[in-house]
Image 1 (cartoon, rainbow, N blue to C red):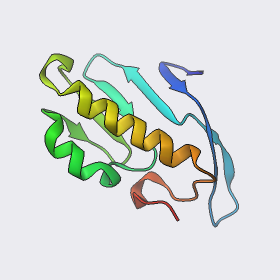
Image 2: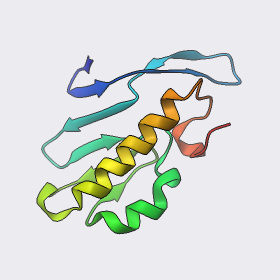
Image 3: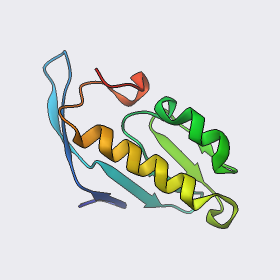
Length: 103
């Protein structure tokens, strides 16, 4: 899947309490000038244990920003993405990334 400069893999269906629903990529990234962005739509808080081991990065609510891929532990990154993907594709994910947990 492509959304502008975002490359996504798989998909999950979300439905919020407000009634808003749709489909989104279950794993996604974007190679940007400032940093490579890895999207974890289940929220970075769900991966705080692994983020401590990742290496130099910054985060947003549902994004991990990596300025230097050679400076991070790619095995840890793979685990974060795989865990997020598994969470999102296990069923309807109803929370927003800022909630950081499945309901």
